[in-house]
Image (cartoon, rainbow over all chains, first blue to last red; front, side, top):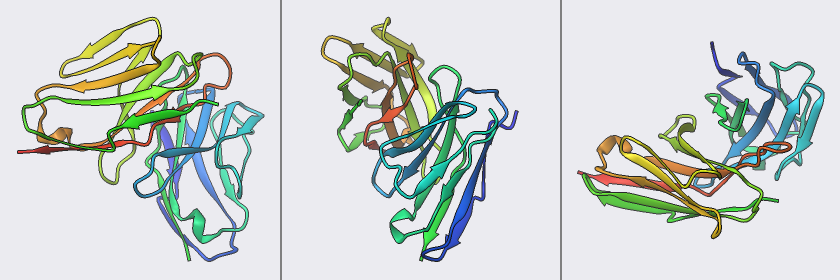
Length: 110
Length: 113
């Protein structure tokens, strides 16, 4: 099992550009989430999904979209990147509460 | 929604001493409480968890206690070692429904040799 795989690991964007952060898991987990982590801060929930076709907003959803067309994949889309979205992004998946995290994507918006 | 408060934000202890990190939660319906360890530049990793029908759980040098009435839970690390230096996060989740995992703000633990 690869676990939770995130790509890319690093990305630099210009303000206004769009991009998709990829997340895939091979554990057949129902629950998947996206978090962002800013320096000195905790993990804040962006969006989450309870299964294929079902997504909802977390505490900081503005500027991000998600979709969940399959159990395995949960991409995060930045619609128009802003410097405030510079952060480390973690995807995580769970079967019954114990979330497993991907290795993260370090995103810089200039 | 759920809100998790974590204290202290930084903790420095001598090698071999014990460390205690405390968290409180707001949603009485939360029933699963994991703890994560994050080393510099790495992903958070689950180190121990506790369910609401249990008051205490131990795994070698780490233990977690839960007081449902007071809505707080704590992480205890005994005989600390340099490799315990990391940021620790508590979290809370309710199994029924969306299973959103809400994190505390984190505690930076430093073990001094």
